[in-house]
Length: 288
Image 1 (cartoon, rainbow, N blue to C red):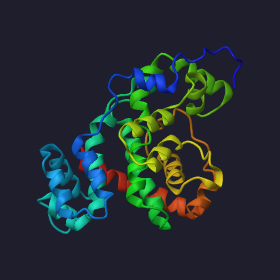
Image 2: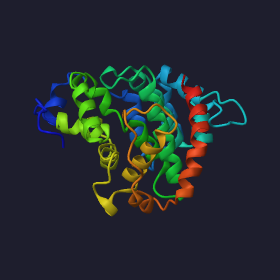
Image 3: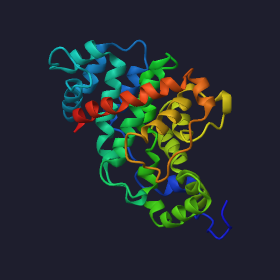
């Protein structure tokens, strides 16, 4: 790739993570809720109690629960009501979306992303991943939502590091007509997806989630790629049609292998794309 005039990266991926003084962190309450909702023995009351101790999180969760996205027949006044009506997995999504809003909404100057652009794309990917898994009942929709929402968290960490190399990455991407993340990997030695996987590991998230975040730009496992990685990969591509293109250049066409893994037809993709914009708008209003 290129003509060899680019500098060798100064830091390895592990060194970068070690050099970042403060990795993005999830609130303790959110981490607790994520673990509880993975426990089949957890009760609705215990989950709602865990959320309710955090006043700010409770307020935002209730705001989203009462948004047009969920179309509740009546107003929900407590987290316990929301859990009983929407279910624990939906509440897991609400808690995660509420607690990552500020983190992902910030400006990412290193990627030339204005305030809100990374968040809009992340939310679009989350909803698309959820819709994809629901379409043919492949995998767990709520797990897909989480992976989609967090898939670009590596950009938050890499933002400062990539800023100085941004022009070199752009030049290489234009010269070789490759996606931004490939140029990023060539210049830096790693890309934001790999960094994001490390952040997910730092949060002690399940291995399938870490793998989906790491692999959201390619199907390195071929036909053996997990349904979750395939769902986030397809969702990431779809989300570029309804949100700011955060990878600077248009993504590659969807790999047919991903569609096979997810049992999707091209007509399914078109239906999801047609409905995606409206769903994003409804949920985003509940968060802002």
